Image (cartoon, rainbow, N blue to C red; front, side, top):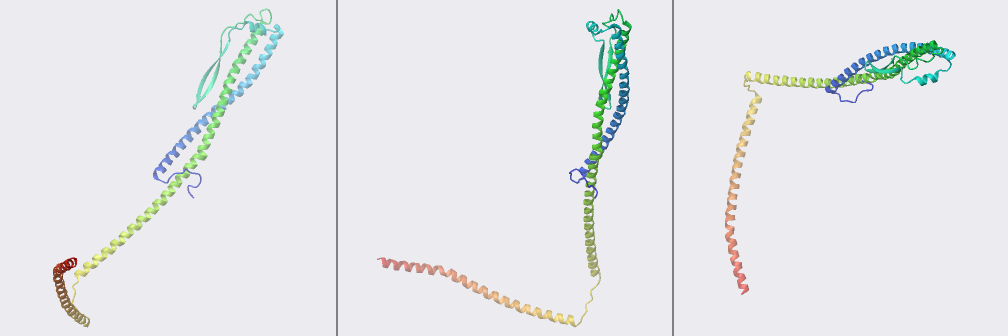
Length: 302
């Protein structure tokens, strides 16, 4: 079934279909941009990884040379740590931090800033001066390599986290959001197709009914027109004669009944007139009876 699987809970309307198409287009655009970002970060990550490997190897060699030079100084002049600590007043190495934008990700970059001059130039003046200067240069290179390695290592860790987050987003859009939107669009299209089909069937039925009614009306009109155009010829047969006889008999019966009805009406009218006369005469009788009763009552009282 089309549209099966996880989908959005929406009503199957044209507006919802338009919104789902816009969301699908936005999701596809976002997926392509995130994929490009992931590829750019991965490329930079691999380059930094290569530099980190080189810096670590270089750091190992430099630290090895620094350890040997320090051993030579110790052998030639003895312990000079207290002399260096007494003469050191200002730092000769400073670290500057900057930021680099890589596909929207800010990567820190550290740079070593070496101040010219030194506070312990007189160290090893009596003996072992060359070994001290050599150790100083070797340790300066070691510090520069250490700062470079710290910058690369920090960028490596940040890029690792960002690439993982970007991969999760790309996979979520590709395997969750886009399929869900596709299923929703298929579901809406299926429902709209079914609705349109039912509407089309209804319209076809209505149109067919209208056509049948129009055909029947036209046929009736045509039949009436044909009947008016054809003259009717009188045909005298036994049936027509019998019908005429029956009609005459019915007419006679109707005439007799009409006369009887008139007589009945006259009788009823006469009876109504008599009733009215009686109703008019009744009040005088009532007055007489009232007077008689009043005289009798007076005799009884007296």
